[in-house]
Figure 1 (cartoon, rainbow, N blue to C red):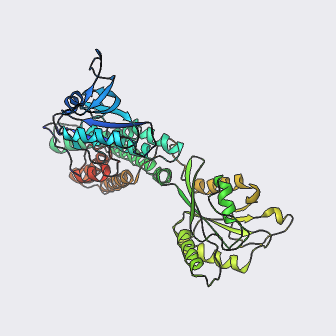
Figure 2 (figure 1 turned 90 degrees about the vertical axis):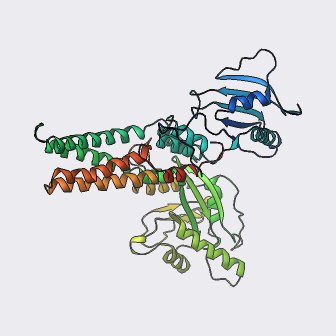
Figure 3 (figure 1 turned 180 degrees about the horizontal axis):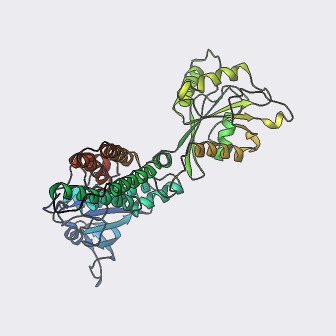
Length: 473
């Protein structure tokens, strides 16, 4: 990805290249509206060349015009559309922006895009509109990442967290912490340069301020797991012997008929996946092939995929037939999926078909602490299963800290560097080293905090962030 040219102030020049992209998904015979977005110095001239507005409609900023898009040379009608005008600096990119709102589908949108390219615009790269918004100072880096998170949100809670980032709720505390560190650095450097003209440094006060910053950074770091969970979702694998009701469990939980259910063992031969939301957490549930001894090559391949799915899952639902009780085969599967030592896999034992085993005591390994009883074929026990899953999530402190705030992996890495640098600064102070040494790690902390909001960021970091955006955003 090529980062746009900056002017002398470090911002993207308004007179830079004009970019264009389709800003809506293009699906044949679906979608009533397709939007082509243009940003840059030539956006308005391109609109004048292509769009014909009847009557005396005013071409003013933040107006919607009605008219037709025509080929500028042949005059051929391309589409009946609306035109949105958003002139600099009152636009998403702080450049002149126009949007052609065409009929949905593919043909009209593609024709308008090609006409804009023929008029001198360049096809935008992934995230380039938001990149320009960042470079022009409309958004900081956390807000730009909030845009991407909002587009990709898979649950209402994930969307709320993304909106919090977009509104600057993460940037504000980060900037405050950075300003505190800058103030401490200024105090220290002043004592180094003008030791004879200033009173002694308040070391106790400096230590107190650094401790406050360290505590605040740790509090933000505590949201990293929750942020990853909201963005990526929880992966849950349903494993067990054939015909214990795994597919029925998937169908009952997802309230769909994703998996085929029969009384024949080995019906599920491949991975079946369903996506749902529980307690604001997106969950990917995987129904796997029943695990048993088999000479059927296809079934063996399905069982191998079951093992891989269990290994990749965040949580395993070991499902047994309550009527049959805990069998030797169940014990063997349990040994395969539970993990070893520090790598123990979170696991819930699901006793399915409990309606056929009423009053029966079902023994199981005592180390399995979470047991849920279900009758999936009758949609019974699903609420208890969901509560057990969320209890494991909560036990991992994945919903701790601020409910409307969470950091991503890049932000967590920068915060961790800042935390380590501040701890080294505390050690330097405790060892009573000269003031010059105090500034070394303090500067590193300031730089790391600046990377989060974009106040101190490299081109490679920007390329990495914005390359994950969709084209047109």
